[in-house]
Image 1 (spheres, one colour):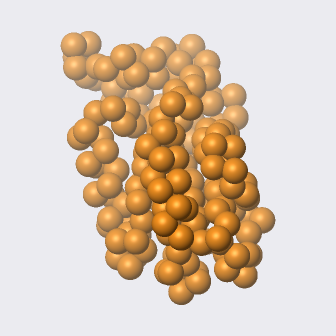
Image 2 (image 1 turned 180 degrees about the horizontal axis):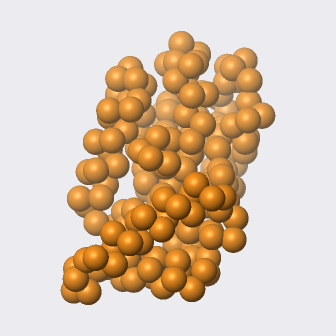
Length: 186
């Protein structure tokens, strides 16, 4: 059975990860907006990627609305956001949020992975710039000793109006290995 890597990307980080994953797996790469429900039928393994915005996965409705079509498939979900996923508490927070926002039948079926994206001020609209300003203002109130290296990078980036990219191709390794294991089990 074939494998699809489907993604919804607003600023490019999710698309970058999706391309890397599809390349490693020899899978079909499909933007979520171009996928019809019937397209899902031709795959035994689906890897879905979406950016996190206010705790929700960009474009995940493709899976939630088609749970009957994807329920018998091997499903993998990767999210992309600014959280430093090397910090276990951040991963717990992400997974707890997803458990609350995804339908239980889908959540229980998914294998979850989280990757760091970037902050692309040059591409952001007003609303996302406002959210980033609020977030950086919250970080500025923290004592310097409480800030992580990535917190400092975000503060510097926002303060100087520069883009910052935390994407890391090596981060896809565990997901790729797990998908390959699922492919060989089919």
